[in-house]
Length: 129
Image (cartoon, rainbow, N blue to C red; front, top):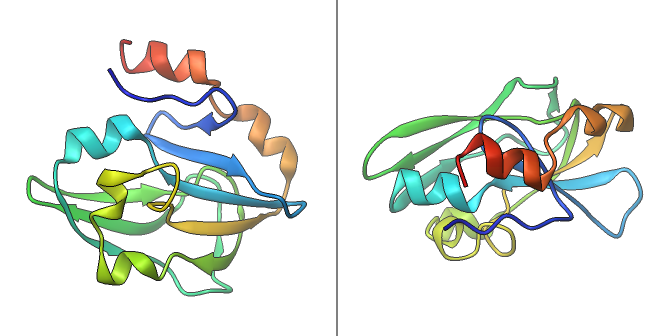
């Protein structure tokens, strides 16, 4: 059974949004379910800081032994930080998707977009758990 923290928002494409201590900044990554489906992550391609991304636009790719998948941005915004640790150790996505395996931090353009995302219970239902 996948870990689905209650305090996060989710997309149907298996990304999550986690609030940070900084107002208007969120952390984005893939869910525990997604990393489990992908298998061993071997490479993550992420955007540069200051890249502007629209809601549900591709912001990068993730490569695993089984497949390469696109990463979709849950909300529109500007990338303010990229998890550099993934360059040296992409398996952090498998080991700790909601912690050390995060991908980008985003300055949200319109916080109302967060209300369009799935709750933990909605996401659990979406993946059949």
